[in-house]
Length: 402
Image 1: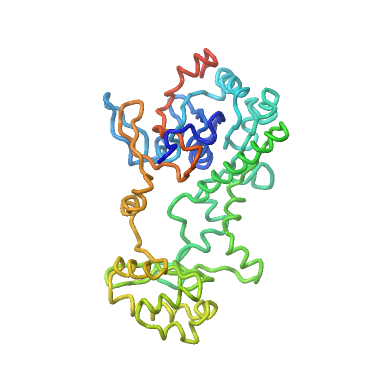
Image 2: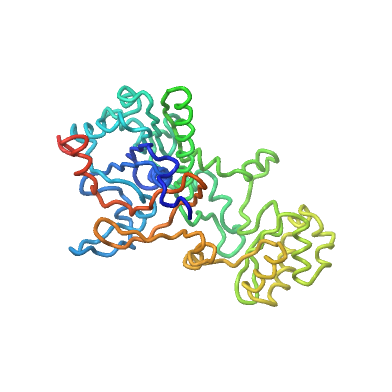
């Protein structure tokens, strides 16, 4: 793609990533993918927790040492790694030495922890008044839960997201379910990145830095979106409807002759085309199904009628027929199938890189396309402390000690 080896829209921006696990590192990776220099500070010898969250792990290097976990690889592409023990004077000095040239700081320590080390926003702002300091926590910097620890799974439960995910209780296997990826972590990282970019733009106009407070529970509640709006409008408690959309039909997973098919109809015109493609125009004029409200009210009858028609062919055959008719539909791909999809391959979403130990690492590229700025060359997630020597010679002679 033209501009792929460019410097990126955020070239010249420096990010100090003091975070670990998922939400903060995801924000840091977004910045790196956009061309920022991202310096990840990790605990000596141990590093980010996710380096050990496996299997699977990257295979051994030439010396037989096992590589990092795939979990770590998913959120740390394009960064530099330095080690520093923030509980020591030497580690704190390293971080302070980086602040004058840093634009954004990401951290997800418990509330008050960095203040004990003299590394909170107020302390950093004395060294760099324009610093954008983003704190990511489970529950925020204030409130009755501010001191409680949190992980994605817990927030999916507490935010109400699990209450609307999964099959109803009266269906075999029904009950609350978490989303199949750590969606709260990922979206918290995205919200944090957006907030930081907004603060950078404001700094450009005013010269003033910013302290940003992003809470995972806030993000989880915000992600309730139409389900929360429905409750606030009607007062009715949202319930789980499995794969079926509670407000738009037909949008569900349907059985076909050889597997399952996702069908996504968004308006009456698409529904009529669906019925015509299935060979039953009369279904589209049935008084029960002629409007979206009617289709939602008679969802079970509609699903049964559609599946009787869909069982005549296989899922991929129907996907081709419906897509050609302008009805969004597709098979339920596995992860491997999704990564091999012709569109995924065309968009070059999987990239092969080589880490500092010479191992081949496959990672996902950024889902951005810029006509002018381009994207920087994707680099492998760093080894623990890979950049200690280069940074220490440039910034401070003492990285982790007292």
